Length: 112
Length: 111
Image 1 (cartoon, chains in turn green, red):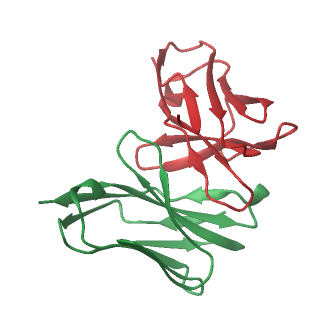
Image 2 (image 1 turned 135 degrees about the horizontal axis):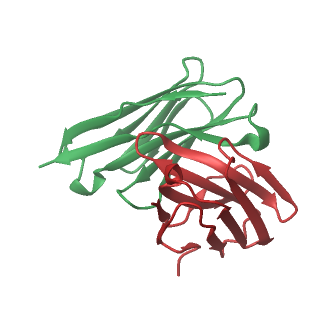
């Protein structure tokens, strides 16, 4: 099985930069996803990494190091609407059907 | 119109009752999933289906059953609801190898 760890909560200031870390242990790593979830709403896809390095999408970037079992999501120029939970999910070939396993999520609070 | 819809959006039921949660999608995806979400525990997979004839148990299938009536429809049933099944339930769909798209969720309370 997998073990996926993320901080439970983080607080940051509007306009700042925040980095949300995710560490994982898998036997057959096959990709890592980040999702954003506002309270009471559906998770929405943010980014996908399968090779080492940085993927940039506007204000959001995601980084992966497979050798370290480590990823981070970087949010720049924080806005109040970025207050949400951020879910890290790992796909593992060892899982039947190549299923995703989700971490517990990091609740980000952006303050004025 | 939403690509993935769930009904009902909220439901309160009593212990021992049978309840069905329904999911429909217009994305044309073959793969569909049911998850439950509890505070601090993230999303946990209950059942998944790769096509109408292929249904598989996930991490926490005990107490649940599913039916894939068509490519676009995937229902989750609780045969005899119990209080610890109180949770937020999400349906999701995907293409092979791509990200999952989630429905709006069903908030279920079992009293």
